[in-house]
Image (tube, rainbow, N blue to C red; front, side):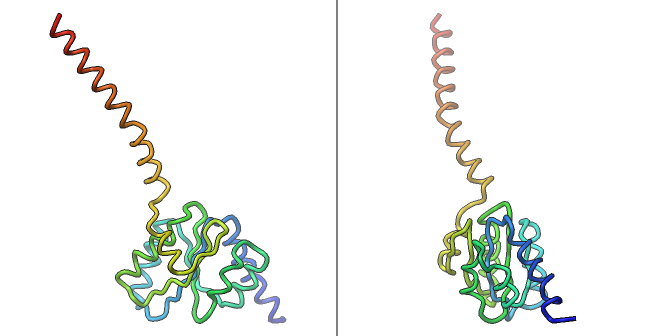
Length: 164
């Protein structure tokens, strides 16, 4: 069997993983202990992020001609990719949160919704709350004026009842 025939399924697996993904982050995992790596994978799984280690040449072939082609700039040394299909900031949030305690983990860069960001850009993205948190804050800010207005109307009604 030729080498190409052995490698093609891996390239297709990477391409399928990235197909429809909101974000993909490239990281250097050198220096992580087994316990740290296990903990990182657990946190990423809980956040619905797929974390895989692939050869750089396989990733390069899989991202050719896609919106994730910017990842090729980060494919030096050992590389793992963290991919999330539904939350654009989840991978960056978990990885940077974990990197605070594990200095060995290095975020190289990533693609978020079709745009390439270096490590500094990914750090900024990691500070953005999840979609659910943003929606709840938005809903709270919409409800607050209405609730205050209702309280004022109720107090006026109660005051008018006392006067009568």
